[in-house]
Image (cartoon, rainbow, N blue to C red):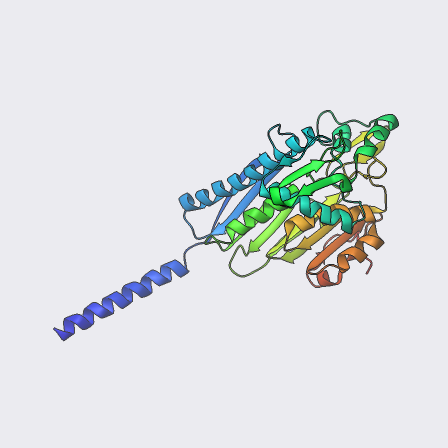
Length: 348
């Protein structure tokens, strides 16, 4: 009898060992889903030992999260919180979702930080230029002059108790295009952190967030776009994980008239695309919403002031690329950024 019990115990232990072996050695699979929200193409990629059915369930939930942010914050959607705020400009407060309220509140923080270089009340100007859409055009000086008075983040009023927002002046419009994708990426990552994954890459129109690893060992190598060439051409790579990487640059969206390029990063002060020595700015941090706002802010400030701002912020790094193909890195990137294009030079 004792012998039978011993054999049974050994069999159970062997079964546990074999099961554990197969669980540990289960292949890491790659699953991805592409979708269109927030005015751009979005892709979520999972690296996981989950089976296809469970992975697709995770991807569907990710899409639901992004779609929800789009429904609330896309100014092109008539029923969105932003459209309702804009419609009631100069009239009354509009009750909005907690998500929308928090994003607008954060936007105002970055407006203060940048002394107005980042300003989500720029909606009327964005609509006037319409860069990135079929009806994009260079507006007249008179048209620009007519909308500039509507732009001032200090005219965005918040009622925190009631989750309500109001634009003081009629004609003012909020546009969250410079921050909403980052917020959506953060929400997706927060969800993915609760799932059984080896890693993930969330890419919302160039707003990238890496989580974990793709092979259980190594960091992700993220290419840094060459601002002089079409998307997909890199000047270097960044080894990173559990961070967001967001770039603002003149190559992304633009229109051309009489040989002059007009990019999509508009100055709330002049009404025209920001003109300085920069081609692009990439921000790296563990908060994608902050990266989103800071990439626009740092680009608008220029290399010297932009570097000064980023270096003053905790857990935040940046790559500045000038039109002269000069690269400026914040100190924390010296060991993780690898330059692969000899036409560019690291200057600091």
